[in-house]
Amino acid sequence: MLCKELLLAKMASLAAMTVCIQFQFAAPAFAQASPPKCSENLEKTASFTFDGQTQSFFVGYRWGEGVLTLSNGQEFSFSARGIKFGETGVRTGYITGDVYGLDSLEDFIGHYQGVVGGFLPGIGRNDVQLVNSKCVTIVARVIETGVSLSLEADQTLTIQFSDN
Image (tube, rainbow, N blue to C red; front, top):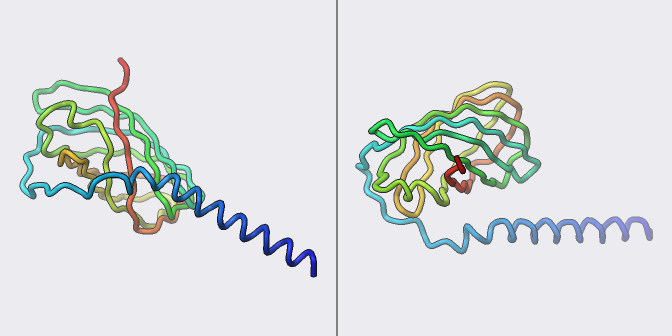
């Protein structure tokens, strides 16, 4: 009977630790103000390409590098990092997309949020929309390979310009 009680205590401790970790990771998203009221008719102002990866076991960690191309042809390298809860698997992705509502280059950097989810049995295509606090909206077409299962939930992504 002692082994069973010890096992239950360890499981409760692990559950408490998991909740604690989730709150630590989720705190920045909760600390942000509610999403801004953005216009629905934003003008396309740039496009981008991005190569990324995701590794996850209940919590997904995403990262990668991309190139932002403004409508005047100027190009800027950037990196992105992010997390998403409720995801398990490994994926690599090639992403292309458009950027809407970019009034200033500095408005591109920052934290983006959007809802994503699904099942990837090997190779697949997915469309994703993310928005930041300055109403810059990214509409992405994702082609990915790997195996993963992801609940439909918010993801948080942070974009910054690369040092070149």
